[in-house]
Image 1: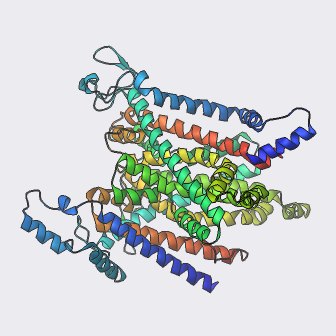
Image 2 (image 1 turned 60 degrees about the vertical axis):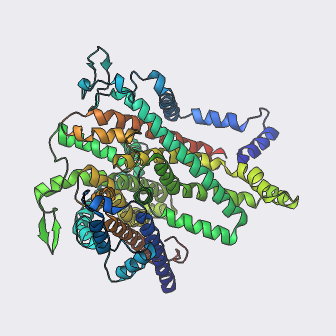
Image 3 (image 1 turned 180 degrees about the vertical axis):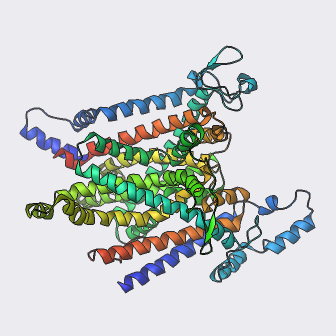
Length: 307
Length: 325
């Protein structure tokens, strides 16, 4: 963000109308209609996930509301009591629409939580590597390099095969697979910042290391992480869905979108496509919209673009 | 350069030792395989006998050193479930996975490079934009979901191709392959397309950006001015320069495809090592899981090393000393 504010300061000197970096960022962002559409789409799925308990026609966890006689109904068919299942029902007679809302909730929760934790961890190690340099730096970056040479799915499968399945374990697996991306990104920005005068000045003023790192270095190096976080969130959701689909992710009591898809897989071959098709559609829309937003964010936040 | 290679090899061995330690002790903590292996009505004596036979009654660290010593003799332990050497269990299933990975490579190369070249040469046309936005989908949509959709469309709705499994295999040079029969190929198409999609998207994007970059270079202007035919410019001057990064990525992606075959093989019930891994994790078949993970790490480190050596041979400016495992 410093790059932006520096330039707007120059901008105020030369042009009459002052332009705030935030405002410029917004106007650049809305230029791309596809990205704005994707953002709206993502916010909608996010809202659906949060509001799931209030807007779902049926609570998929409440056995009283579920009628086993309604099992595997095709989309649009009426229930025994007259209610219409717009997206059909699964093998237990659960309404797919409600299951998808709740599934979105679980998928977004697991993906979001693991990315927040990996961001914090990655930022911590990345900043330490950049600030102290030397041995600390080469040790941390060696670990990062080794880890990034293996694909995330392999790292996650190794960890899950060690720890077993469960919400906390999937989150740990994703964090271990993803923190290195954040560490590497913030390290490269922070190394540039470390050579600037204000850090030198802060060190010269004998401010404590912790203060220099957390109040001066961190806020000025954090911008590129936004893009990485957006794209990695999509990856994390996809990774969780893949693990759950393989039967080594979330437990059956936490039916995320991946588990819903796995649940319908055996019925797909007999033509009952909706049990896994619609959850997969929801997953795809979520992931693709996050990716498009992240991709466009990268273009907008790219400092070279502003020159 | 030789020094660099030796240093890299040492590093690989270090990573492998670390992995064996991590995986062994980690997998040790998964659970008690006795619970799965032994009949629920077995008494204490029978359980004790069975643990002794499998060496599970000794302390963990002792088990590890015995394991490590056996590794150097090529003995990866005996599978609890199949009651065969785990290396044999894996090697039996390896040809199926390699066959799948090979076909994905072929698809990615022979579809990806022409499409990328086209999109790079005519970036403004509608079909180029379609190719490029399609490649974003290839990246971002989870591959197991694409696999399901392929099954839904081509196997269930159209009925053109089988939904899973491997076709009839025949033995060539002691390896079972299904490449050379029509039915075998039919079984191969969907999983290979599914596995190759991410690589295809990568190849398209790399070729496209490479082509656009190379076209702005002075030497292209120069050969144009010399009056060479478009065909020759494309084949000799553009394609050669574009291919260097593509070849690098193809090498690096080899291990990735092996890792991703876990997903594709599970979707298409392909009897390779990926599906075996998932089964073994669920069966708590420790020796097979450990052997698989070590094998994949070996494949990874070796293919990364080979790519690095190739790169420094192709382009002497790239030094081999500083790089990842």
